[in-house]
Image (cartoon, rainbow, N blue to C red; front, side):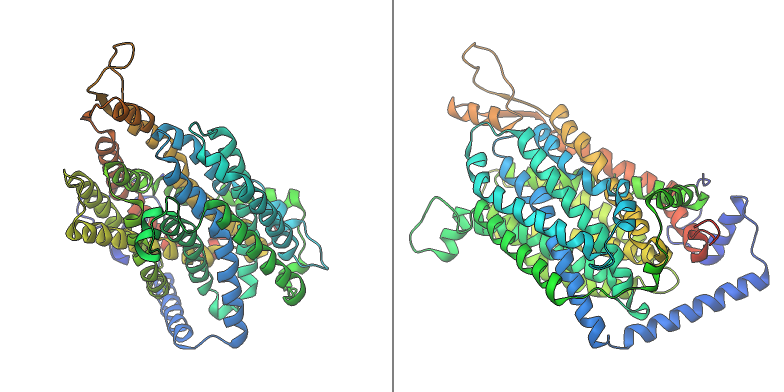
Length: 538
């Protein structure tokens, strides 16, 4: 365990201060020869990185980069539905606690390291190491989308939605998406040339964000009757242009088309890594040895704690705006405007994350993200009392959305670049999946508890008693609807959102200054070879 940051250390200290911290931890101070060698190595890395970024990608790498973007986009489609659209559509009929139950469907994406060795070790040489998994998984996802597209509109129209059934179905979909991610992550390490390997995280950022925003913001906008009537219809209708079932059927066809293209037109070239076949048991043993590395334990702890400060903002703020009267189409429009910025941010983030300190932008983005969480809470608290959203208020929401997304993109790309550097390509899919899984799980495990805490700490009662002449809570949407039917008003004594978000941001700030920042600075000083096992152990 690392010691607490000494008084006087700045958040982003220089290399001399990092050496001092390493000495305090009991690590030997580097000799002048080692320091000179390290600085020379870092200078060489920076020159090579600058040369790589200045040199355009080859035609082959360009097409392979485009393929990675498409595969990550397919992965982002079910994620955008499960993490974004479905909770928004359920909010009108469910409490935060029930939405927290649905969030359990996210868990396969955060537990995929459990079966990633199987994906890495079991494959057909005729089909290809990665295509052996990508092809069947995408076909299964396509068939499941087609089946779900036939039934889901009926499910969502019911007054009492079967949360358990919906959670189980999306649990399976996210399981498929997570398995595809394992294979694509591993393929990315050999699909791009060594000089352009840093662009793998950019492809992931662009693809995942594209799929996510198509299934979240774009879908919500075109699914909204108000948005459809305002911009595309001359006669108002009570349904949107794109129903959920139709959207799922469309993407089932896209899954089939892209998968068939992979089968017949894209040949997976054998890598030198494929010659070193490792059985499943050996891969699990290697993973255990990697986890036991002292610096890996510190890194894992950072990944598991890093998103605690942001989780209330990401899980509740948008839902709270909807609850107060901000329309779904306005919120979707704000994030839709944000989408092109994400593409630009992803491009520049890979440049900022190159060089000797790829996690330096991550630390800056961490600080900015905490500040954005505070501003978002203030914006929610200042929602117009009359419910009329003015252009000024909309632009405030838009500015906060873009800034928050910017910090998330920089964090994602910076961390992805660091993972690419330290990952062992011999078990590339498993290694990258382990690291990505821990990062995802850091944002998944607190979500259920945060949503439940918002309900727990919210005190809101209806001004009119129920049929039994008893006071009842209208903190949840069903209670609020009942209160409105009885011509009553919901009297909010305490909104749990502000309490929970404040606690999360405070915890995040404390963790940043006492553990995360000093640990990250220390990990960046390690030689990438120390993250890999010796050949006689791998």
